[in-house]
Image (cartoon, rainbow, N blue to C red):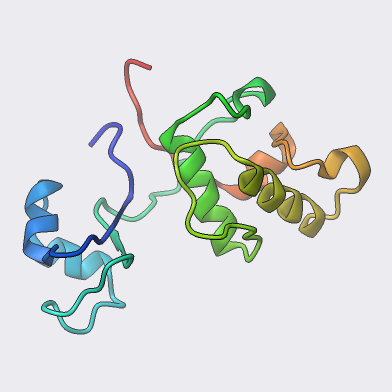
Amino acid sequence: MNGTPEFYVVREGDTLSDIAARHHVSLDQILEWNPQIKNKNLIHPKDRIRVVAPHGGEDEPFPGKDFFRPSVSSPIIEAMGWRLVEEGCSAYLDEPDYQWSEADRKSYAKFQRKLGFTGSDADGIPGRVSWERLHVPALHMSGE
């Protein structure tokens, strides 16, 4: 689905059936995409549940350096944040979200250093080369 985030963060009172219905997928799909779920009746608040098919190889195009400012809020920033977490480069106190923040900048700087960048090339502001190496899954957003 265009513009649909890949993951849903479980809230108090959620069930997998409710989450599946809310995202227009079957419970079986949710279970297939989330092998970490061993008991479909046991989920916890703050669990991350994949709600769209796993990444098929297409990456989100580099949105440009001017995109990464405190005034910007986008699901692309959240997707980038989760990739940084997966890369072991998290500086987040909680979880990534849509709003560009200092935690995003610090996390991205960790990733840049992991790639071997130094000095101003490791300032935490994504550039095209490091962005392409992060492989943020394409969100297929339309009309934005």
